[in-house]
Length: 236
Figure 1: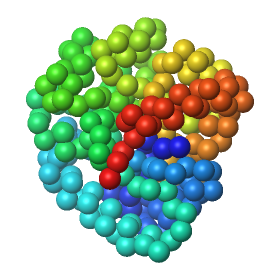
Figure 2: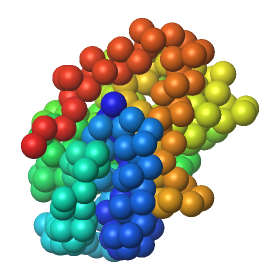
Figure 3: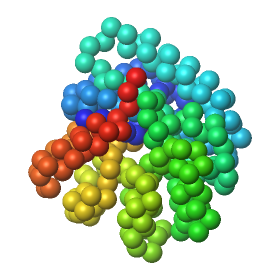
């Protein structure tokens, strides 16, 4: 199984602070049966003014440090790099964003605004594919439910070719699990991720979420996620 959302690269964002934390997280992922993990550090163009190329210098350096640390370690999940791109106005016209897609794919992980989305914001995201040739994957969509009028937008976006990622935390939550399983059964969710940031308060949890899906929805839904991985999973 692939974890499509994580912050495991050391010292680049609010995720793992150092390589020791990164290695601890990776070992826990492996213990949960995770075979591949997408390292998706935050990219905040509107906050920092950083360009994709400047971001990649930092990301590649963090990746190099981590790979040096895990060299020779057995059973570590395969790591692929991308970015969690925070929505910003005009993003569909920035060609260099294509450099931030998940390695070996055309998937661009996008974090939407934490507010009720305007028509302009929706149009901007819908234009990513047409203008840049990327496939948007909306990060942790459950975090936006309270801002929108209803959940019809999920299916409207999916009809437009936009894919959905849900965090394991929502699947495991006492009060959110039932809704999460319903969305999974309705085929609203395309990818799963832990969104792990560290080995303590935001630790890896995708393995237990997968087990819960199998128990509450059935193994066929795990098979569906695996089939999606065959189509979209990162390849080196």
